[in-house]
Length: 222
Image 1 (spheres, helix red, strand yellow):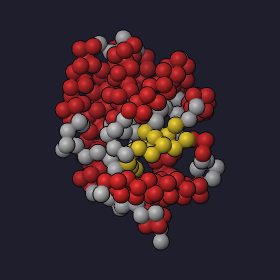
Image 2 (tube, one colour):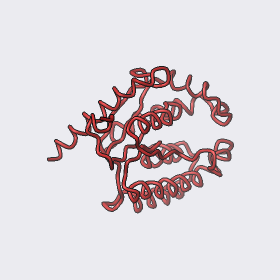
Image 3 (cartoon, rainbow, N blue to C red):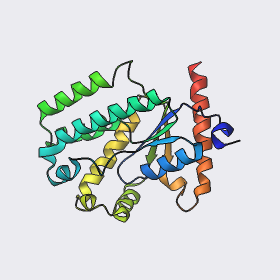
Image 4 (spheres, rainbow, N blue to C red):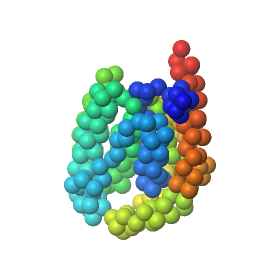
């Protein structure tokens, strides 16, 4: 019996991994997908034509970046469900509007008219009964110091040049966002409670928590 069957996780489930930059979403996505024999859906960072420009000039490129992300995530969300599910997704579509776009509007790095246009488009595309929402969102959380250490260890140049104050702002906004998020069921995992890099076998503990949580959620719906 494999882990998916052992912990009664539906074969057509779509599970999204959310959390701030550097918290370990990609590592967790791959580990869970491998354990469940699911497919992966990764954020396409390297092929993003706006990301480097955005880090050089937030005000000029924030709107372009958010529109690009919205289009790409919307297409990917539809693709996963049309394929029949069985996916672990790196980053959710909800974070862009709830955290990034709102942050840039409030900090003056996105024009209010651009923000209104982006928000209207997001609501028309995503916040409808026809949009396929994930079965579960796993929120990875950790202290600011631990997350900054991970960002430095990863060593992406565009992230190394970003002021610490930006990561502080993002960390706080993520916490506020997840506390009010209700788009789908949420399972929180603290990054200090596991180490799937040094101890890959520990992923079974996480799979067990996912299965138990999904069973509880399903029972509440009945």
